[in-house]
Length: 357
Image (cartoon, rainbow, N blue to C red; front, side, top):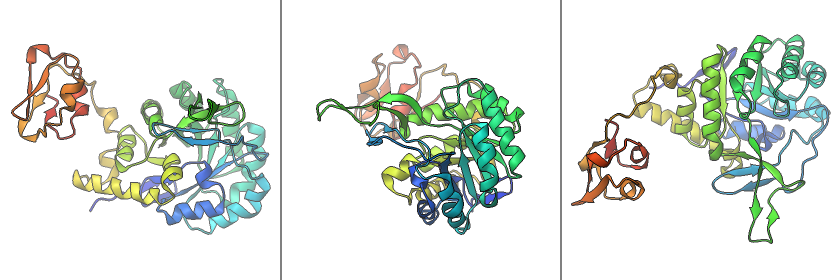
């Protein structure tokens, strides 16, 4: 039986899936819903020195991506300290408290949330490319608490340099990454109105963000020797596999919980476990960092054909710009001399009829 447990510092998780800081963890009730939905740990929405005032509307599911104009918690810190965090502590799962954004805020808030936190996550989404404010925030947190302090990095900065600067300042872990933007969405069916309120700008999350966040995890995991948590577009078990292979120790989920409900954490974890079992992996350590240890991918020959696997769907033929692939007698064939080894057909084939040579 596959062992999916994860050890993050003093926290032992039954599997690597937890929520990310966002509207899905807006208060203690939402955090309890996450726990009942199968999350292995809890992350509270980012608390800052004042309550956030967000525009309305502030979320839109645009199918290929999710757009949001969310900020930090709309609850003042006093609400979290006096009620939400004490209630969340009663749930019984490891609790990570997210704080923002600069050293003065952290120095004030960290001692107040200390009784409830198994770890802190510092958001740097609104900190620029200069690492010193982030480092000051880390040092302020480390002076105030004796639990691990993680830093959440935005994917549009030089994440390796930022992660190294965070580690130098004493960070115990890195979270990669945050939503990406600013971005714009236009509702063409309603007079060209902007999907987001306020200035109309939002931030991209959901599946469209995953390749960017995955790259950030991959880069950071190669640069630091502290745990990395992947977040961005996790919506199924195989996404967890990718993040772990890129070097992550665990993952966080937000958009999928918004669009599919809070039970998504357990569903993703179950899919992950089934994938591990079907591929005969006994523990997470067997797949963690696999991509980091692989040599550079090179395709030096046309794909290997497995005609008996071909379903005749014709997807590979349609997308082969070089007309190297064709169907004959409901089976795939190739003009070897036309193949440029672009590799597209390998990702287009759903039946394993085309494989890397």
